[in-house]
Image (cartoon, rainbow, N blue to C red; front, top):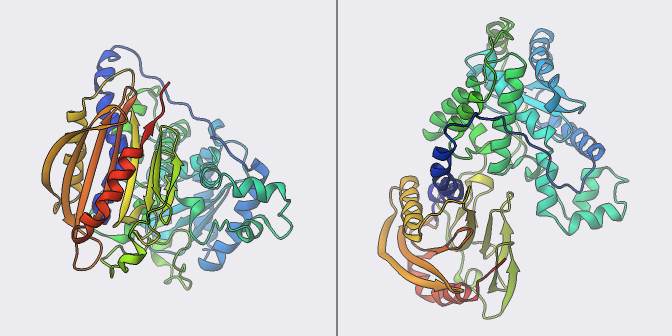
Length: 474
């Protein structure tokens, strides 16, 4: 599946959820909106370990970036930050804020509160409120402990063993790396789920509003970045680190409707001076190396296809469990759960291309479950049509090769749709089997991907996987 279509695919769970909630929203139209509240998720690390890990990571980041030591600029940024971290949602973390010389539009915060703001972000922002919006978004990631939460979910076995073994003598990051859990080199502390991004948007908007900044500027700034990213402008690489969870602008606008009306007067008037200072700075002397925080992910351009021996499934199978379902899969393939827990990828080691949000699935399968909201229902035909339409919107080359056919999966009604598009592998076309299943609690959907000239060989394995699916029943 091409990079564009795969990114869209990962958004579809939220899009289906939004569609399911439309009628429920109509029913509640007369009720007063309420502000959302959020709490940190499950975590193997203590708050103190968040702080320790963040300090160690910050020391490594500063070896890659050039920290800007301009007292006037730093005082302005700290002044904006102080208003936001004074809000109760920010917690009591030892926040620090440093401007670094990098022309890309970005900012990132490490566990425990160390935040780095690119000079490119200050240049791109249109107002102090937009800068405050990004900072509030990042502060939310710290306060809700999103970094260590996602790492905990992704390493359910390794981290407890490492922590129980007292492997902290040489520094937390180094000890975890010795245990096979590298967190900084691959950006694991900064790759947030779409649920985490939604929380950072909404709680960030609340904090900036309480601090006196107009929260609509958060929506406006992300809207601006989406437009730049859509042009292929990697100067706006913040969109790779902060993927759009879907309906981002509308979600922020809805949250603003629940806020008490007030005059926003926090603007200090120093923003234009800060932009002038940044403009006058010499070019950065340091450049962040590939794979480090703040760096755009590698290109997902077409690559040479691996040998089929490295891709094709074995005849031996084992079982994976992912909450809503279990499935048997070839034992020479690997499983990888999405950070939000909403999807499961099963593919050969070389079946995916790229990293993070720019990963493209070229050979293998991905499984998803989208629960219904507020008791609403969606037919299997509606769900299938919605999924196909959104895939085609994200990939103009995708076409329907075979109309949807009814099927049965573990006793439930399903539909199978065959699609074709360009493959991330050079010189290849791609075939996609899209499976949708109507469950009482929601829509289960999966995609099976292979180069078109090898689909006939791998299709029996895909069918065996489908036949093995067992859904959890209450």
